[in-house]
Length: 229
Image (cartoon, rainbow, N blue to C red; front, side, top):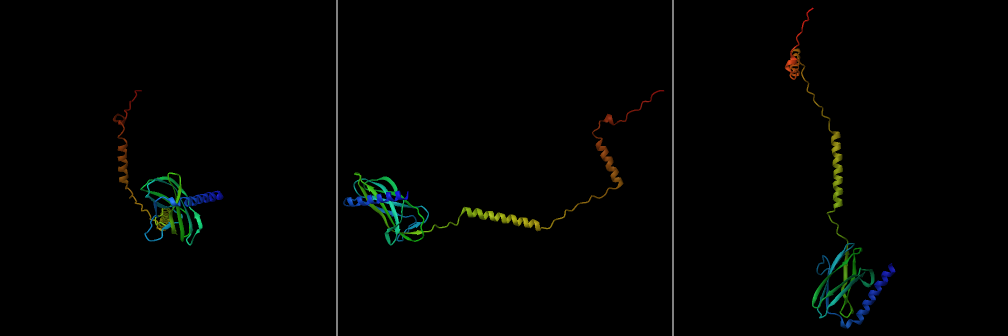
């Protein structure tokens, strides 16, 4: 698989080179500029390692014929020797029409992991005219700085971990507090003893309350009928 990819890249580079030699006299009038994310004017652009760096490539066609932006390819090389290629970048195909006397902006993303240092970056675009002629044009050819990604202070996983640890320590603290706290004795309120008179009066009252539900004709004692001998 590696050999196939290398062969395809070599064929693309060779085709672009041959097209540039055959069509250098009739190259289209296109001005190209590249905008890096968070770039500061006058300073070397930064490429964040391991993250998608979305570039904006602007094509300005000042000619009288329409063109088509076929693809954009790129390489990362040593800053002191651009022939010493570190890695070939992903080739993005567009097939977008660049009309005469107009401007077209296309995205190009660079994502690769690399140590923090200065490297050389080369980007090439393949333009096609109405006669199917290919014109390789230089998009960017200068140095960039690879930097490490900025660590965010707001990390949801860390926040959840801190909350979990705080909850565990709070639970342990409450357990220790309850274990060390002295036991409170419950005070039992004693009911004073009743005198014989109070006890008898209470029994009589309960007897009266218990007989309230009995019908009146049942409360009367039955008469005793004496039989004659």
